Amino acid sequence: MMSKTSDALSRRRFLGYAGTMAGVAAFAASCKKNDDPMPDYGVDLGSGDIGILNYAFALEQLEAAFYMQVAMTPFSGITPAENALLTDIRDHEIAHREFFKTALGANAITTLEFNFSAINFSSRDSVLATAKAFEDLGVSAYNGAGKLIANPDYLTLAGKIVSVEARHAAYIRDLISNGSFADNSVIDANGLDTSRMPAEVLSAASAYIRTKINGSRLPQ
Amino acid sequence: MQFNNIIKEIAATDPEFPGRVHSRRSAMREFAGLGARISLAAMPLFIGSVFKKAYAQPSMGPVLEILNYALTLEYLESEFYATAITKGTALIPAGPATNAIQTISNHEAAHVSFLKMAITASGGVPVSKPNFDFTAKGTFGDVFTNYATFLAVAQTFEDTGVRAYKGRAAELVKGGDLLTAALNIHSVEARHAAHIRQMRKNNGFGDVKPWITGKDSGIGSVVQASYDGEDNTSQAGVNIVNINGQAISAAAASEAFDEGLSKDQVLAIVSPFFVS
Image (cartoon, rainbow over all chains, first blue to last red):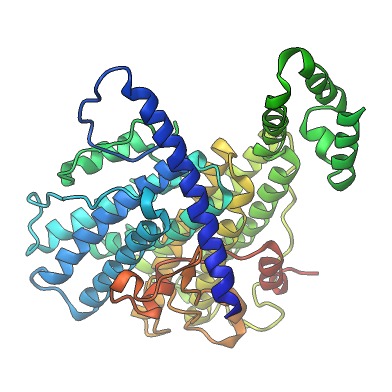
């Protein structure tokens, strides 16, 4: 019962902060209104930490949708061990997606629509290549966005997720080619993983996302 | 004078405060111009902005301490793998296993060099390499002669490394490039952990997945401290189990988020590996 109370409190604190940010965003939007009508720039992720959380939410929606399809239509020749661990990954991504959705509450962006037409879900190569691209992209996205986060609690949360994405990336890479879990296509000579800024990540992800996403107000 | 008292009060509870605002005198100068430049109503905002400026950036002292903390852990990992490599096929099977350990060893050595450089560039002095005892005072006596023991210790080091970086990342908030570098090391350790765990699984040394399920080490009670708290299933007050009607088990909820470890927890875990 103790923990329930403190959970509710920290939840309220999280949402309270989110509420404040929404107010600022609404104010900024209303100021803009007087200038000229806004053209449709797509789903606005927002600004500040809320923008970054929505950015993460968008990427988790993408990953969850992909692995849901992978689990529904397993590629030919999938082994029971692969099926089990890919299903694990699906559940992790759904957990991430739903966590952001709940935590963001009224500030959460809408449910996105995806375009997986370039992926052959019955082909092991096609599925694993896409999974590898998504996982490496996700790791680099969290790594790059870390310095844009202002609230230490959110930074900690992002850290709790990114290492799980890195575990996924390593596993998928090893399925494609054993030993490629951290090869020099992702790790540099200093032993550092890749970072990517939101503009680059959103551009790379846009091939798979039918809904237009506007990240123009994200922190730089 | 009121503002002087405010600063004295703050300095009493936070001795580093004057340093945070560059110097007491410059802080006073910032406050002294208030009347002329800022209306009374705006004062709380202004004071808030001075404090925000003072506290938003981590000052170099704590940052250097964190970097040296990271360096100490990287020394441990680097020497561990370098020693293992010298044992050759007496310890690690030739082929993919040796290649993987060599890859990880190279990364840990690179982390040591990188952190030394970062600390020096930040005006600090890198700590020197401690002397290590990888048997942990005899607990892992065959660590360099028994492949299973070696991989078990490797898994513990990697999973602990992930948790150690994670546990202190928040102290580097707004840390810019240094934070990014720490995050970039952090995810490499997680990639290592996933691979080592698969090596253990594939050799029948432990029933583990690339991710941590509950607080299960797949090794035994001797390394339990490295895994305690990993069974957390609630994040920021949000319960992840069956969240929003999705079928998310407690195992999946714990796997989906890695948990941080405090400095004291990490030091307690690794201290048996230091020659004291």
